[in-house]
Image 1: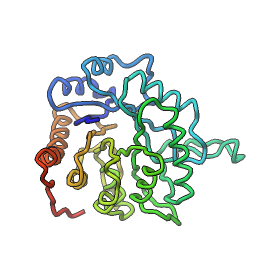
Image 2 (image 1 turned 180 degrees about the vertical axis):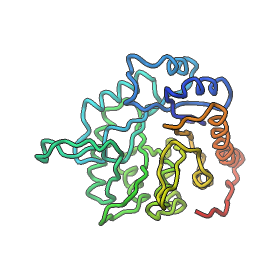
Image 3 (image 1 turned 30 degrees about the horizontal axis):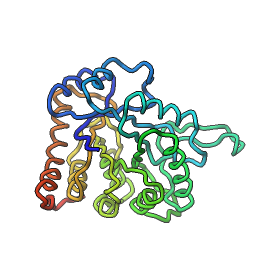
Length: 293
């Protein structure tokens, strides 16, 4: 499905998003699934749906990378949200978010954060089984997002691209590639985003996330509270050199700017993706910039 250019719907910027939807620059929105009640949708979100904008639920609580199987109640809730929104797909993260519980004899612990999955074959096997369970429970296709992290686990056996490629091959799941997270992992873990994109199965790409962050003391913080920096747009350029993304979405979760600034960020994203669309339309290769990453 061709989604176009979108933005993460948040109640703090609902009015600005409605104004953006009046023009040609906004094609769809994404909503955090756990933050809405499907039987009592916010009026502003309902208005967007009535105007025909697709709404994609983005989950944060399944913890598909954890040792436990996904909770049936959480899966049922996500499925209900997807059905209520008539969503074309749903997305979640390649992460674990909780540990402990009865099987371990320890108190359950909610991390309150997306934690990286070890890139080992054992962890991949658990993730694949959890993904299959989720796919069976959801009424629409599932896309999974690469996350940002401050560290890597010792003893990892696979690169991120190898890990994601095997995940796609074994489950058929779609990918949500966050180019801001690729940049974060470049700064924090020394991972080359160009090499990752060259090895990823981009034929499985469902859509793309773009977001801002900030560097402090040599670490990149994926804050979603800052403008999208040139470095992240360069990673988006690299992706667009390889494929035309079905959709690209701007995330903002704090320190919300005024509508004109949001519109300007969306315009910068469209300018990058327009090159990929033009290249696909006339059969020529996309730009091949010399990027210092």
